[in-house]
Image (cartoon, rainbow, N blue to C red; front, side, top):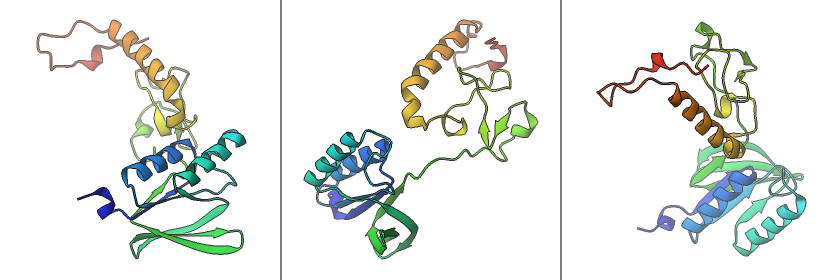
Length: 193
């Protein structure tokens, strides 16, 4: 069975860098199926240089990756082939159907009801406050990803990986030697001050 035997169409909502990369990947592995990228702004990669956006649009046309610009998605629902995305483009209502819909419209922290109220961790609008080394206001507790008020994780990886490596090395250098049982861990002995 080939991938295209069950995947005839994919819709990706939002045309930032990560979603554009996902569109290219889907188009390549599902050769022969329809890949459609839906973007609210007038160009793909709306946060990037406009020349880069135009070049990407040219490459997408060459590879038969459809894109709909200036689209205000009104709803996405189950139906027909699997999912139906309805949008307003200019003054026209358009609908695209697909087996798969990937929505990358933004991010929000999910920090309610996870026990933060019994800690000293400070939040602001749901985001956890950290310093430059991702330390929270609770000793020995760190936060990364979509729960911290920074750029999206995909764009932070260039900084986050070295910072985490440095943190791990610093923390490890302060740990006591492991006990004879290599599977045993005693995190309470770690003191990265």
